[in-house]
Length: 349
Image (cartoon, rainbow, N blue to C red; front, side):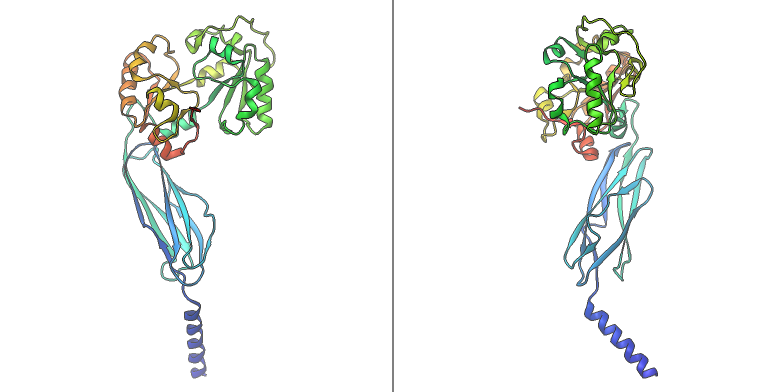
């Protein structure tokens, strides 16, 4: 019986050896992101490879608090096959040196749970900074659905011009999960277009109740506009519909995003990323002239490529009484690392 048992064990061992062994390989076990401002989203993609000679089964990828991973496109790798594992770290509420771990579980007998690291230094935000993640949360888009001529005569600061007839062409361009505030002179056409966008998969599309005519009757309305308000009379107030937004609600979230770069960089960007939808292009040299035109009670976010110039200008505007002015920490470069081209648009030049 003993000889039979040993023979059986030997046969099993030889069978395992013949079948081969899966081996989990990683291009780098650690990624150091250097130094970033608090609130920056750090993203890195590890490459997982089967270095063995039998199929590798990845049974899980889990991360410590503050770090998330995307789903693997495949979990079974043939010998020599690779798969990307993207990890993201939200540095909000962190400071100093941080280290996050990712545990990759597999059928590799020698390392059933490999530990990957993402680490670096997080610099605390200054009072004049806003993090990319906070701007992402606050971002909305105002859309003027009147004619291009009416838009040129007068429109809300930060609104983009998308006449109703061209709105279907924007369905694949507009962000779907943020508030879209549509308006016209009286709120009639924008109400119809807001309902259209909702049916097309934009659940946060809203029509400004009463349009620009009603908006122009609110306190300091002119400071939120470029040009002249419409001559149309404000419509009588009626029960608010689910697809409508009252003036007060828009006023409470009003955001003015200002791109301090040159017109050429605003149009295309250094890496063809363009600019934020609805951003005003006010190069640094022109910003002082705009101080009398910008509303002091609105949230204003300045940005450039790296955040260095916008940091200086945000401090200047704060000292001039624009208390809600902030600079995008790390500039558009930091935004691209966190969100790629989300909310960005490139002019057709």
